Length: 283
Ligand code: AMP
Ligand code: MN
Ligand code: MN
Ligand code: MN
Image 1 (spheres, rainbow, N blue to C red):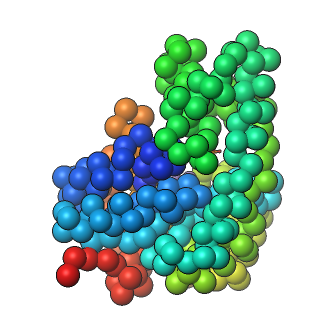
Image 2 (cartoon, rainbow, N blue to C red):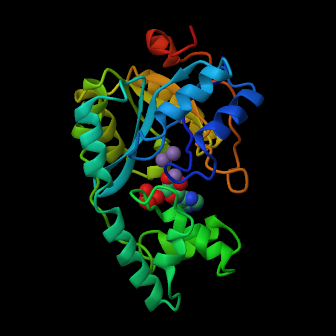
């Protein structure tokens, strides 16, 4: 099954509207789709409606920013009730502070000789509650400071660089609990990205499971083939369900298109087998 359970619209830091993503997913042969905007479910109804019109089976989704072991970790939620009040309040609390952080990022960039980055980044934002580093990256590419967003992150936006501002996101326990209590399943997003030591990674997986988490992304646009093999083994070792998602953000920026990923390794249990009762279809 060509399931793509991770991508972003312009409700967070993607560049396409939810409707355009639905159309792109359908055109690319996706058979089960979820829109997983960062810390936000404001695009869910539009995505679901657009998927209905295309006869594309849909799961609700989001990607929650978490701080674990002083590192930002992303937890994807799938198949939850997007109207759940505790989840909505938790996401709002997680988004809170993004504007202040953006102002501080702009100060750091100004000191590095790049003035006006707050206003500049704001020009790329559709949802003013969700200013992300990606919007700063687009501004610095548009103004010719860097060639592409990767270069912006490398030079300006990661830890130790002038536009980086440490931020405390949700706790792992809260993020997993919000998703589970809204009837969804929680998934560790792109685990290879965190560069954890084996002790830290063991702690992440065991605490995630203790809080009720059930899945891990194995095949994602953020993983190499070797990463996918490694986390396929981890999924088996920790008895986690395996997820698959492109993490598509933009036709101009994303290396992996919607629906373009290789299949999950056959030895894994796909997370969608658990979610069949929560798939939304027309009729
Ligand atoms: P934020 O939530 O504001 O910290 O922004 C995180 C987002 O920045 C991620 O979801 C990615 O879309 C993007 N991002 C993080 N690291 C990189 C990178 N090295 N290159 C390009 N985009 C990145
Ligand atoms: Mn993003
Ligand atoms: Mn992520
Ligand atoms: Mn993502």
